[in-house]
Length: 256
Length: 262
Image 1: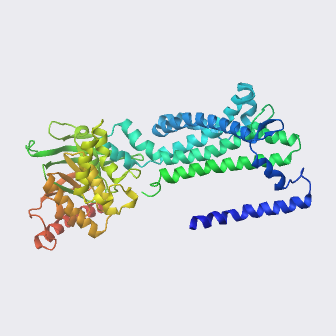
Image 2: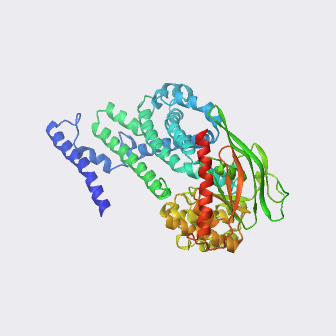
């Protein structure tokens, strides 16, 4: 019951904003400036209907999701092993860290012109942007995870007969896993922002970002808002999945 | 030094060890020699910072001595001494259940498909350490004393030749501590385990040990070996017991004063 109360309390402000929005929209009475929810909801309730003679809201969402997952997985596949390696070997860390620190502050979307030059417009360049966006949070959290491991655990493993490889698989990897998971959660959020931004740039022809820009050109503000709502919902959904995984997988974390 | 006695399970000869402390070379051990016999409980005492833990870490193979030897049976260096170590902090893996923590060392050794044997050993140890009710618990759900019980079971699981204990009970309350001290004596009697036990507490040393080795201040030398001739269980109020406690306390204090005069 307590949980239900919390959820209800959390809904008060969003619902309040919706109501205020609707009241203002009725006063403004201009859907180019502020469309009412009576105009926006129909788009959200018919996600399968073709929009502007093209793909539906759902199809565009799936395209964006597919791009995010591809770039995200690619980033994970490289960042986690590299992070574990850097955390394990000071030598590798010394070589890699300055490079990482130099590249990291560049906003992923600033890579777009180069990405287009290298991979041309479309899937390749968007994938690259998402990769850049999600790579660093995963790498850095993996690194932090490995570096936060208590020497005591490694000593215990060694006195019980663990080889260096066994220390890696039975101590370092499980101890770093919660940190990595947090990195994945942060990285997915960034990747999701990157895909929408990348799709808004000229040259793309599908995805939620594209849909929003296309609707803007047509003056269909209702569709823009509908697109934003879907982006938000998908973002919340994945964040929820990551958090649910966290509380299930790492009940031990922070409680030694 | 005499030769190796057949009953010696571990023999340290002229161990020395220095650390680099900033830009200073700091010598922790100068010339530490002693031996431990099978089924014996030997306590290692000395002023704080004299290198007691370093001796254990060298035997466990966690650190290398600069010179000197660690001998055990046919084994002539520390890397092959089959020792397990209990640390001041329990060092349990917080992501593993009590069962899996105890099975950890066995799973490293018995590499394939002998889960049946592992289960038998772990179940036995859970019973020995009175942990049956906590088989599936995670370490954070246990009290400090329980955690140290799991750590002891985990170390016993690999059937070590000698159990090295580095102030294992110093973080526990008096009652839990006494309980675990009695467990140590019980394990020694039933399983013929050998213990090398570092402690700061003279009473604990006299309560447990067959012999107490007092290390000197830094750089450490094993100068005095004090036998404790009383049978178990020992009465901490017995005048003889108190006499040895006083004797040891005096030796260690004296040495700490020497250090302060330098």
